[in-house]
Length: 590
Image (cartoon, rainbow, N blue to C red; front, side):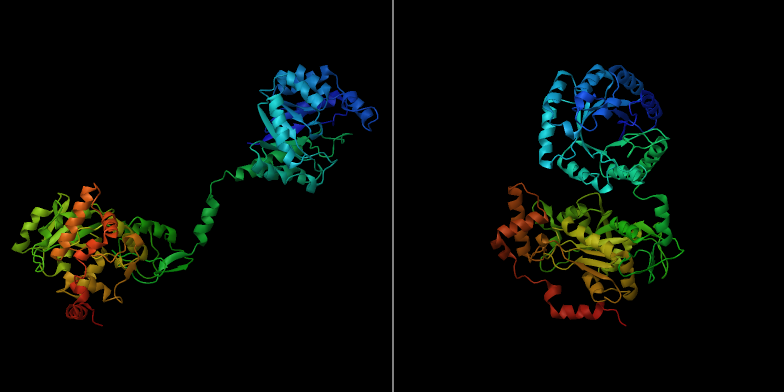
């Protein structure tokens, strides 16, 4: 809020009728908060040898006249008094209950005789305005403290600006506003005395208000013939009203909505809307960096930031879209995400390894327990074969929230697609039951990157064996199936994607360094089981959760334990015959 203080000064030239008429004209103006008078007596403000002594005699009003003027103004506006001499004090003391504030010019800030008089009256509910023109910056703090200590006013306001008859624009002390605001917590008043005929007389105080001044003092006068004194910067009512109107307009600008309706319309009518460069299928995502061209168009479509927002919330395309199409909100749907844990009991190196205990839980149950803790996942599925030898896995689903599914023993993609179609799943997190220590710390960055990149298939570039996760779009899995009606090697599902980068968008990310280790955390050998139980026992003894971060921390601190299962082979990484066969049978023929 801006406090507008009008200054009558000496435009009355000692004419009391002029004074009362000016008070009447301005006291009810909407936006004017206070009016300030300058009572002084010629023989107290100066000696008889001073050049203005005889003028001061003409400007003199009696105490009764000042009381009448103060009463008239105080009926509807706050009254302020400029303090010059003992006579000013006399007027203030007699009318104290009708006065809201006092102003001390910089010329009397060190008049200890005068200021001492004010100790005899209570100013605790009054504002005190200190004009500090000409006072060095390092002296101001002392001046403030003296007035606070001696007078205990309700509030002290610092004022910049001095009377220069008129004051040139470069001399108006505008620069001091920001300096004082940085150094002091006091409110700042700006008193300009610029040529009243200049438009600067209106605009400069407005700039001061925008720059942080909250009290604006302006000289005023009646319309008609110019007064004999103090007319240089005095505004008539009509021009002062222009100032008030413009001030209101300029101040309102800072309270406008961040984006206005016309600005919003301008952007909407000129923005380059993203449109697809290629056809996209339902169930796919988009990459804002590669899949679009950007042009102005009459088509309605959402903008890049809106697409990115949808991807952050794991939305995918809900319908097929052609090249040159713009995308709309309804073209997306929230992805139905599922973690699918593939499990069989046919292991030869470690028979029925899924049912071996790691701590209190079997390996498959521990895997499912951690799978249920993955965030942004709608379903947790245990997918096994429909062979009798795997039937007992139904007893190890860990929780009623786990969906038990049986399907093709050898074509794992077919097994996945059966439950994907049944539950209308859009995106899967691929897990095998020999990965007991899967973690959301690994899933979260891969899943976010999967949607941001518009990928078909995502994984981490490097992770501890048994902790990496693969994110696959159901639509991409269906495309694999269209190329391989009998996916005989889909137990090694990864190869169907990484061997066909021309058909699928592959996205590989770097995990945070604290998750990247050369540790072996997959269950395939008796040594793996031994290490996992040792870790589990140690963490349980310390009452720590058996999670990936704590496991990595434990192994970092106990490197000798790594020897238990170090050097064990990962067949699909080390068997050249198997790798050659996978490369042969999982690549899509031209």
